Image 1 (cartoon, rainbow, N blue to C red):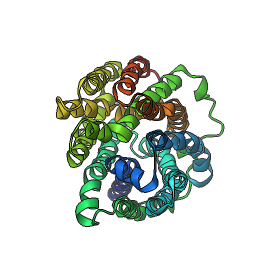
Image 2 (image 1 turned 45 degrees about the vertical axis):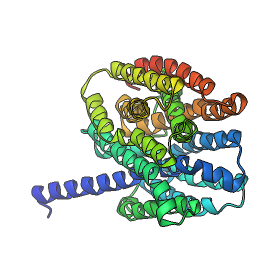
Image 3 (image 1 turned 30 degrees about the vertical axis):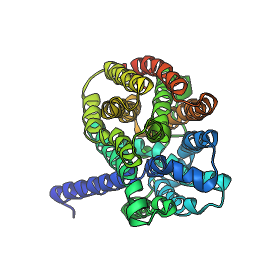
Image 4 (image 1 turned 60 degrees about the horizontal axis):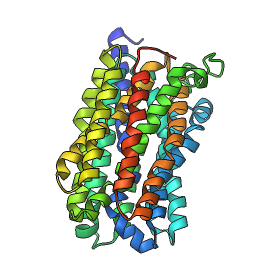
Length: 397
């Protein structure tokens, strides 16, 4: 017979197991992306890649997240969220390990899609895991896993160049492939969760009457997600190159890029926790947009004039990502609705974000500079602010 004390201990242990698994998965959610920017020059040289194709490379994540993310609710309903996340991590590890050894640009892009497909399903399903296993601590738990995400993103951004230059003898392929080990390390933590029976109440409900695509809150979240993703992937895909073209040394450019992710560690947690406590998050979204205008405006004026200040502002606007994840979990009434809302907001949002990084690369090719591309991104911050205002209002799907 299980006593009340033993039952409480088991529940605490189960929550801790789920939290550890959640954090280890989150660490991997940007490694495949942030490790590329600091060695983009080397990749382009090794594969014969133009700026326009490099812009396509920056758009690959949003294309993949949009397409694959839509399949996540169906996969979760059939196999269970934990099992799908486990498979996603295995697919990610395989893609990261093989991608750098592609023989050409097309195969490199294809293998990037493989790695990113694994990330896409994990992206969509983690908010539902938070809602299901930590319903009383949605904001703080989302904050913790976005901290883990930013730790992974920052580490890959800051360490890829030093690893390539000082550990792997200038071999950028090894500098990229080594991040597969991090995905492999996350796999064992999901095995206990994957063995659990599928609980229909915790998964996507086929009879749920809510049609998220018809709800204005869902569209506000999707537009906000799309605009913040455009900003984020411009930073991920092009910020180190913008600094390097302004005369900033490669290693310093990598550190400046890393700063934009590092700031998400303290700010992401604090912002998510705050968002979970207040009734409306609209003013938070507006404030982040103002920092985006300042950061991109500084880059437009002169990247080398105050590089650390511009990177700080851009790091602050990047915390729109943990904010929108928190909003998705808060706006859904139950875990099943959160899965559907997460899939809709992320997939539609990534579709909206697809043209941004590619257009930035094309404008750079056409003009030979960064002012026109940065002016475009500045204009896109305005709809981000407007959508964030509506997504932050206290309503549920």
